[in-house]
Image (cartoon, rainbow, N blue to C red):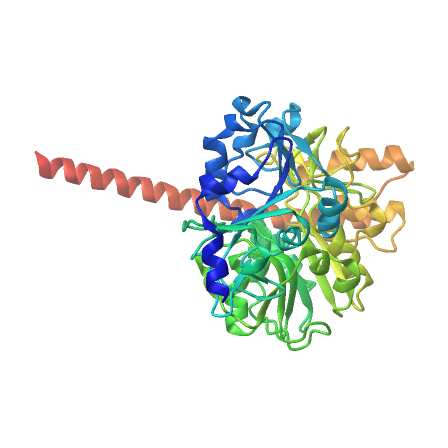
Length: 481
């Protein structure tokens, strides 16, 4: 029965996009579940459309809707800025809508009100159900309330458990396009990231439930957790870094107080390694983001530990994560959702982790005042731990002076004198006693000595490599002559 329904709804991308009308709002899947095959057909026929708004979150591909030729045809309303659309948001070509991640399904449904949903799904199973695979988040929910639902069926989309399936009868049409899923491949972890990961791992206890995210710092944290036991995982999204911990049993979810025995995710942003792990894995559940990121649901996990990154922290503990001045850099995402959920959790902790500097060490991320025009992502009252490669600052329950001192101590040494001057200007006193300053100087000297030794070893290694290459070339040249 279901096969007849499915086959009756099969069509081409060129035919499917004819269901989109001028003036429509079209919400599309994001990340590793973005239906690029259908989007490509829209781009090829862009002149046939007028005043169509594309609503999307983080894209791992290009944003063709931002190109000048699209003016009057397509316009992007972005929920998470990325490299391909930041400039168009800044110059007003594209729109940006800000929201906590867990509220996005309701924002889309109630305020944006798209008529069309474009999604990517797996082929149907023997019962006629397709899976949203890597990206359930807000994507699945849009198929419940949009008038037109067009699905790209891709055999490379993993089948996932949880609230991740829908019957073929509930779609308007299907377009079969098999293409590789976008990948977020693991990159080498820097020494700074590894040190940050070490500090973060020191705050994680056996039996804790984690939210990690993606990128160098989460991967560095994962690399430092191999000796932990009985960890849980409840996260809006994860990358490849968690796979080894899951396969080894370090993360086994045995002690979770909610969804015991199950990893709970909203999205998976990794490579084929992660996709293979979540495929047909009953121990991994994908759920809509208004469940995964709801602070009340997060708090049901005892000993919840959230780890998020940021762009700036000021001496009061205000965290800026998604803007640089007036420029939109990314989005709030799930940071505040998980900071508050972890805070409400029994035994929970939240961590903001970042390198101490930006722009190749020329700019301090710990600042007296946040950059003019920047928006505060996480208010100071919500911030618990701040971590850099220089240590851990615990801010909960601290006075303003204590907060500022703690943050100065984990700032990069190059910028501490300036921060100390700002402290004295603000509070009319020296931040450290002579004994504290002495201890801090001693620690710094030891750290800088270690850094110099590491740099010296790297320079020596590189020099030896260059010499070896030169000798090899000379040898080859001599052989030729």
